[in-house]
Image 1 (cartoon, helix red, strand yellow):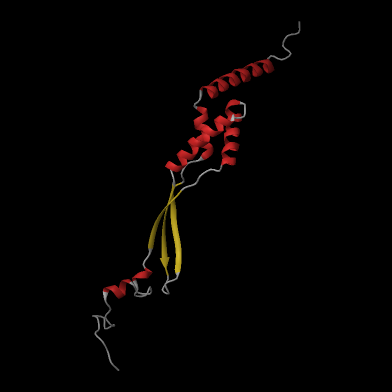
Image 2: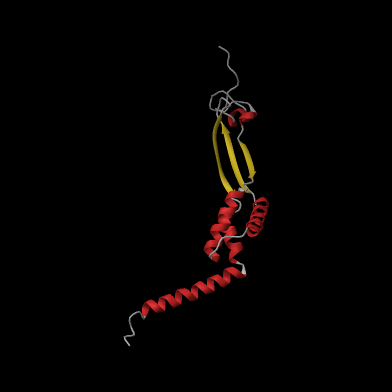
Length: 153
């Protein structure tokens, strides 16, 4: 029976590389892989029209004109292009070289289309006027309800 060199404990000596890669194999292709991914999400034209109209109805009490849909849609698409989503992941490999696990985290989600459009439209003079007018109307309605039936002339 042939024996090789032994360590101080009497067990066979192994190199630092073999100890580091124990159970993984000796190929560097089994090393973990880190991937950083940038992804672009663009809102579709039908979704843009729907979201712009819904936001305009909420903030202005009316549907958007075709020009407004085009304007706000192009601003949304430009913002989405300028702010892509980011993901960072790590892939580990088993002893046979097959992919074992993939873990990661989303670093940035990009632009929230509904929030972007709401902020954009909220900043217009029309939205401020509508908010003031509906606030005044709500106060008048509340006052009428409060004093309803108080006059018995």
